[in-house]
Length: 491
Ligand code: HEC
Image (cartoon, rainbow, N blue to C red):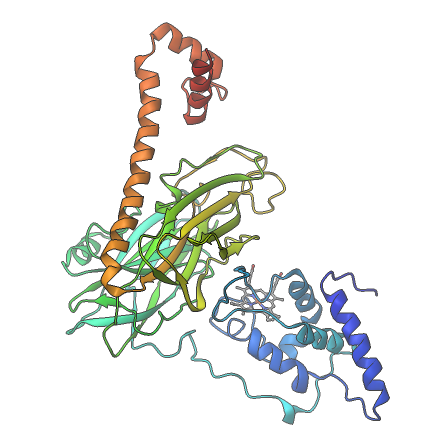
């Protein structure tokens, strides 16, 4: 059977030359699982393909791999596995996943050569994993005390869960590993600490686990990171940490999306503390801010390239270390570029095949130095056409910004420190101003719309409604109003 793999083509040519070469030597050793394949699979696949991790089956033994060999070649060829979506031609990412051409060549040759097991004595040791954790044994593990049961169908639920930590001293957090008990329904969870006891009191006074929230976390308390589908816990770079004051309760602010059957969630959280207090503070700029809430995201049905952009000029020299992006099912492409004061352009991140299932927090291998005056340009592109296989609507529907999974969001977040810690305040202030600027612009845009509806004579208003109410719901939606506004302006 001829292979039609696009990317393995090159590899099979390599394989051919490999065998040509090998056939000259007297004892061309066959490619076997224990000697050649297991090291590749253990190194690149086993961290997720083991019990209690996100992957649906283990890849730890000859049998595990042998029986799925064709599927494995297919997903590698598609670039679907190992999962990795972040690209940059200028900077390297820490822990990048991917196979070399020679490794792919070996896998193909093994399958073509009859999937031999080989000498069991040659099987390498499995890498050392801590069962149940990606980052090893945590310093502190806590869980929700009771399961929260989510209905089979209905609107998405945002709910907070308060968990006492009983810390008798301040701690410095290097990483938090979040383990959803039920990956089918947990869309994301944001972490906060609360030193007032209010969250815990609310949780305890609510008859079912957790308490209701508007989805914007907590009224008070510190933000200490979060998890979204596909997220793999990462430690902050040396010298950086979140402060966790003694006496804090942990708040998990979780977004659930029903799966079609009733499900129960018990989340578990592992804390990794640093011995020493951090040497400096860090922050993040999000473009556009608030996951796009202020950017008037309003995606027409069928639009394959709906785009929002946002820019931010760095007020001081910074060193960037982490980057992530967020969108829902219509997300298509993300790009963050930096234009340095001398005009040089650098690619901080491109994701050209956005996948809702892999919302990873990426870290650069080394700090990325960006001088004061550097302009960051973010671009988020959505595909609301029928050609987007992840489009939840068939036929496509207009989709706006919103907090349901079926609504959209979109933004890119860059984490950084001020190169000179003394300038941290200037950096943080400038980021806050960017957010309030976006808020002001959004308010002005809304104001313009309201003025249109309030200052127009009733007779004209009625005419406008008749003419522009395309969805015939008796009122003008944001985009119908925009069309009316444009028509008025043209008069
Ligand atoms: C970071 C975690 C991770 C790593 C590393 C990883 N996988 Fe996966 N893999 C997953 C998850 C999660 C799924 C389920 C995805 C889904 O259902 O969409 C999956 C699914 C698969 C599937 C099933 C695909 C299907 O269509 O049913 C195969 C085959 C697979 N992985 C092979 C591999 C191989 C081979 C490697 C190493 C080269 C690898 N994976 C590395 C997490 C991982």
